Length: 365
Image 1 (cartoon, one colour):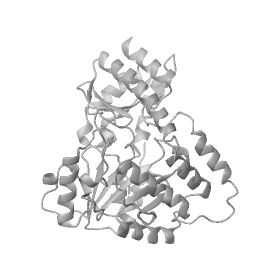
Image 2 (cartoon, rainbow, N blue to C red; image 1 turned 135 degrees about the horizontal axis):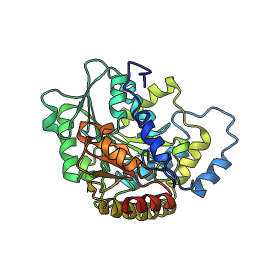
Image 3 (cartoon, one colour; image 1 turned 180 degrees about the horizontal axis):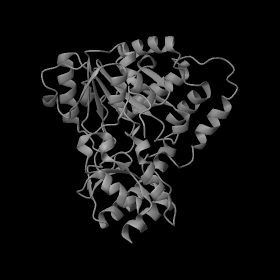
Image 4 (cartoon, rainbow, N blue to C red; image 1 turned 120 degrees about the vertical axis):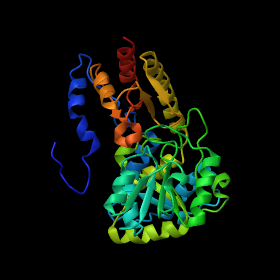
């Protein structure tokens, strides 16, 4: 496939065309576990709020109405333990990917500025940094960063793709290191609600931040917790100076979340029942799929949280993709997320119960 733009690498999922076709040819149909898109219903509380706000004839604002901002702040305080969060410390975004892709640019970073992200990482961290003209470095420890001081350092816990959860001590050491050097820490916490084998802690939690949010930003999303991926409803919170700077920039650029979506976002953040119900679905699917993979000879590494199993057969990941495709299963090659993933595949358990059961049957046949 020819490169569309020399400014970016090929879009990773475009390289799965042949494997997808092979999996789709399976007699029982494809089980697509490659992307992790939600398949379960949008909660009723979101539908009702969206419908009630449908007469949105005027332009929304980038900041959003006070009641929505207050709802976001209240959720952040409850979920992260950062009790002092106010409406001026939150900002809605048009999904979390949009924010990550544009963040270095909107922060005014560019040529000569260094952006650091994990060795296994969501590709958009690097894409957004390169889009702004920044230098990039994949590193899992502050020691590996070396003598150069970055302007922006990404954390991700629970992590995509590996499901790794960073503990309080690890997070606090990174925050202390960054503060000594004036580095902005941006923690992608979109899977905070989905911790399975260890507790997940926000970078905003007082045990990590010391009760001071200076230099800290956390990103959260309703795509996974509330099945609102199609709504593009996410938000950031933390250092009020950084939030204010981003608000000012995004006003000029017109990054506005539609009014009905804002209403749905606020409604879902005020309701925990649907999240608990969704967690129960994922618990069942995760256990069934993990047991089948292990029975088929896969090793499962990390995977303490998030919505994926980080699996390996001890071979190049593309060989594993082909092995799965012969059984009608499509997964994501670990190399999508960096060279450290060369012998792993990321397998999402976000498919329906019926498709997860089909995958399990094929793996153990």
